[in-house]
Image (cartoon, rainbow, N blue to C red; front, top):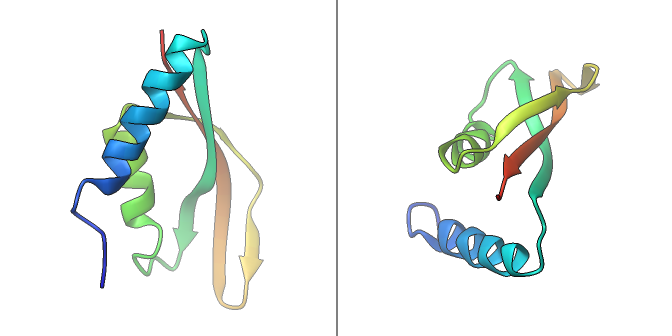
Length: 81
């Protein structure tokens, strides 16, 4: 059973942001794959989720590979203040 589309991730992220703001954390960082070739959809939903929640891609690391896939990890940042 898939949890995609059930707002679970959004709800958890919102709760985490609320708690972090209470202790004066000003930025939230996430590391994930930001580019993949050839695209297979495996990270499309992940990056879309973070961009929808106002994260911005801050750093794209150098290209890596795994079997036939090439990808870049990156750091996404969201300002909380």
